[in-house]
Image (spheres, rainbow, N blue to C red):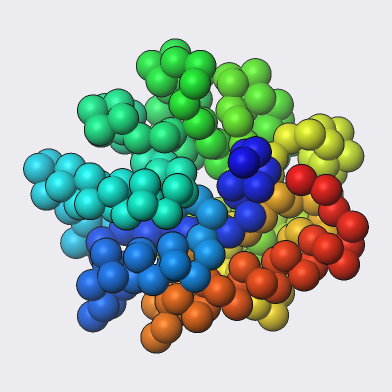
Amino acid sequence: MSIKEQLKLYFIMGSNNTGDAKPLDVLEAALRGGVTCFQLREKGEGALTGEEKREFALACQQLCKQYNVPFIVNDDVELAMAIDADGVHVGQDDEEAGRVREQLGPHKILGVSTHTLDEVEKAIAAGADYVGMGPVYATISKADAKPVAGTELIRKTTLIHPDLPIVGIGGITLDNFAPVIQAGASGVSLISAIASSHNPYETARNFATAIDDTIQREGISS
């Protein structure tokens, strides 16, 4: 499966994102529902650290392996390398992407959050396999979220770099995801839409089906 295909339904979650639900139960339900990539983002109030974080990461990784879904670690290269994760995702305020690529080597996945064309160019030069763009819409999942970006950067980037895998993130729902795909993104990233869902399996399944339908309707190739 290509990177573009893996980005189609990209679930991002930490142990503190699922409310009263058990995070591993939420992750497994989402995987069963059709999530195609998972990123462990263990940040914010109540986030695990140290050995607890490592054990949680290993449990998430095992579930991802069962469903043959890439397991990405957010902004923790040391942990990712220690447990042989499939890759790392970094933001603009995290470790520099080029250095992360040097540490990971050529065969691991590197994702970079971008908010401008200049950041996109730097991410490509650093060896990024894909870029995340957003927040497309207003979001409450990240306290440090940038201003709402809409889909224009996705559209511009796709025109300049048609082969670059892009995933949209930020406030994405079943009602508003289609413009993200139509603008050129390979897929969408979700945090609260799945993590806070009363039925994460059904939510993931509905998203997977709707995205497939949109891709088919628009005649988009992977």
